[in-house]
Length: 364
Image 1 (cartoon, rainbow, N blue to C red):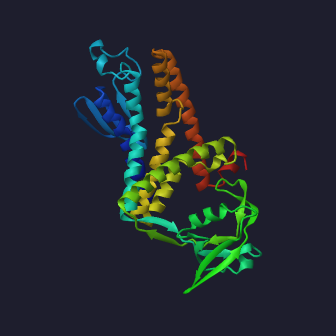
Image 2: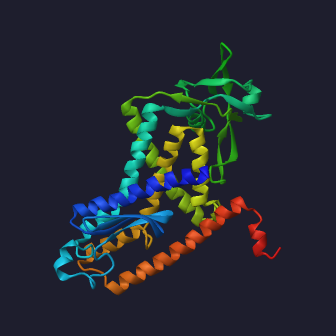
Image 3: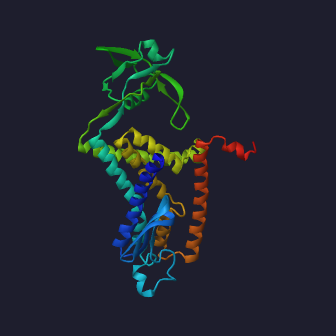
């Protein structure tokens, strides 16, 4: 039950903020909103005010804002054309549609900022967890439990910086001067990295220098100021966005198998784990999903916000609207593809819970 509650909180917040963005900008542009719904399917709660019906529906995996004349002007009284969506300029329509993903970006920024200001910045300690037998580090004398504090003239305060510094070494460069703290003693070792093939986060083999150590996994919290928290927030959003597009490329290249893609069930499980870890990890998780939701919706795919934006861009450049028939076909195809994608994603989620499902389809 707690998994369902945490999932409802995460998805409810993300969907509400996304649809609220559409709603507020639509109202600002003078477009009448007929329905504001969180969820799909049968209504659990409805409230009407100023001609707009506010609704919470039974299926929480989505939501929508229904605007006057959104699909067709045929059923709109000519006196209300100025309040209908399709009657607006391509720029106004683009602003309304883009407001959803932008709202998710803003939500992520606020949550990341709160986490960094009040909880601090989590950092993986530059402490050695394991030393690979026969590696340059072992030969030099590095031991498990050593904390690396300096490489050459660079002070090391986190594992990521340690890894980046070693990665910059090239064959022919002088040996690295690696200073470690062992107990109360500081010891400096001269180490020549070994060029070898290692796997990156996508499982691809890459060639880079290593010294043969792994992190202990211990994390410290670095307290940072407001300006540093703001900069870190921007960096996080940019990094997650880049990683999202890189993952899409790797999926297309089949480097990353499609079975690794998760859906609402996976989000629910992760939400529970992060909530149990604490309030700030839970906020950080919501921010992470919010960025991914924003970027996903901006993809130029029919039925997504990005698909609508592409259509509006074509209309703006051509100086005329697409025909109603063409628009309907784009939406139908996009919706069908979206349903197929959702079926595969749900299948992946179910296989994680019930690993024997593939055997059922094979008749075993």
